[in-house]
Structures are given as C-alpha cells and as structure tokens.
Image 1 (cartoon, one colour):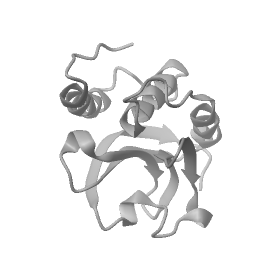
Image 2 (image 1 turned 90 degrees about the horizontal axis):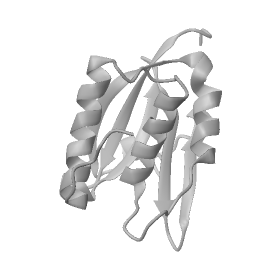
Image 3 (image 1 turned 45 degrees about the vertical axis):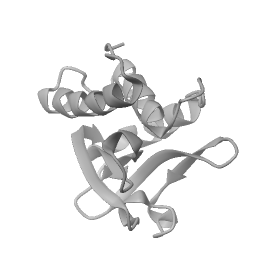
Image 4 (image 1 turned 180 degrees about the vertical axis):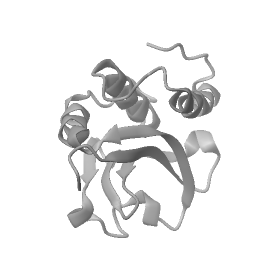
Length: 148
C-alpha cells in the first residue's frame, strides 16, 4: 500500500431492525480489501474492537454479518493517516450516558477526525453522508443534532 494512497471511509450498517437500532462501524478500505474496521461492542461494558486485515473473520467483521445492511460512503483518507485514526479511536470516551451506543461512538470519532484534519469537514460528499447519519440519530434521540 502506497503511503499517500487514498482509501475509502464508510460506515457499515448491521442489523435487521430499523436504521436507528442498527449497529454502526467505521470502515476504511482500498479497492481490494478492508484495512481497518473500528466499532464498539457491549456485553456487560462497552469495549473497543479494532479489526485489521489479519484479524478479519466472519465472526468479527460487520460486513460479513448475516444481518449486514449496507454502507454509507463518506469520504477518502490517506493511508498514512491509518495509525492516527486508530490512535484517536482508542482515545475516545465510551458509554457517556445511559442510551449511548455505537452510533454515538461513530459520530464522536468522525468529529475527532474532523478536528484533527484527517477528514475535510467541508467536503460535499462527506457532508451528505454525515447528514444521513445525523438523520438516523435524530430518529433515535428525538432531537436535532447540531454540528460540533
């Protein structure tokens, strides 16, 4: 993989319920394979799950789930940003309020990537995809979410 290769960043939706009940995971891939999937999972407590090509199995990669519901493409990132993305993912706080879930984590991670300049916030395609995600969150929370 070239250091400056442009990679696709999308959100994987998983679950056969309503969109506001679906599991979200952030995925980064090139044309051949998934390179990084970041998600939070909850059993008794929330935990971060970072999946790399050597760790991809049908058991832990949401795009291989039998309830895979599709993707929302967002933007492109540089291959050289992968370590920074993983670092930011590890720094985010989890379980911040009673109804907090994976969807909130993904939105927090996108905000951190914007703040650090990994994602260009003003990109039209990105804003369209993020608007779609915010619409799903609006249904779940019942409030209008403002950009941070």
